[in-house]
Structure formats: C-alpha cells, structure tokens
Amino acid sequence: MTELISPSLAYKLNFFHPLLMWALLGLSFYSMVLGIKTKKLRTATSAEERKDLIKGQFGRRHHLVGSLLLALMVLGTFGGMAVTYLNNGKLFVGPHLLVGIPWLAWKSS
Image 1: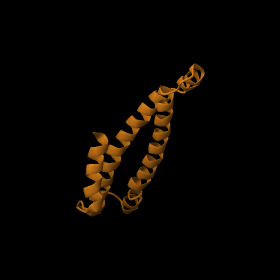
Image 2: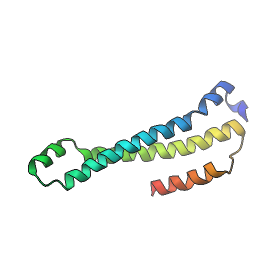
Image 3: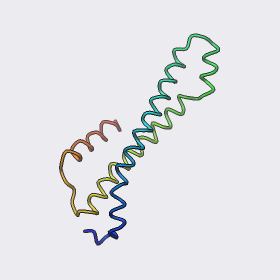
C-alpha cells in the first residue's frame, strides 16, 4: 500500500501524529492558564483587580484556544489513522486506536 506515497514521505508522516499530540498538550496547559485567569476575573473582589484582568480578555482567548484544540484533536486523530492506513494498508485495532477514538468523542462532547 506504500505505492500511494513515496517511502521518504511515508517515513516523515510517522512523526505528524506524535508531534501534534505534544503541541496539543502545550496548548492544553495554555488553555488551563487562561481558564484559571478567567475564573480569577469572575471571583475578583476589588474593582482595580477586575479592571486589570478585563484588559487581558482571558475568557475570549480561552474560548478561541479551546476551539483550536478541538479542531486539532479531530484532525490529529483522523490524520494519525490516515497515516497508519497509508503506510500499512490497514488500521491496527489495538489499545492506541481503542483509546484514541473514545478520547476524541469524550473531548468533543
């Protein structure tokens, strides 16, 4: 099945999914920080603290990063499956696939 793509491209595509997963982990931590700052804004008691936090627009940025995370998770999941299929001509029904698909469904719900 590797006749569909060149061997060098098939080798390079193997790194797409793991690198994307590391990027998603970093974006998740960034989104967590934005979410914590958004909560801090909601629970702020002094007017001065609220004014400083409102300028950061943390809620809007948290929402945008969350939307980006969802899009990248879906593309990464199906991209990983596509690379496996292109390289091997089949999908391996194993723990990685059996955990990855429910994880995607859980995160996108």
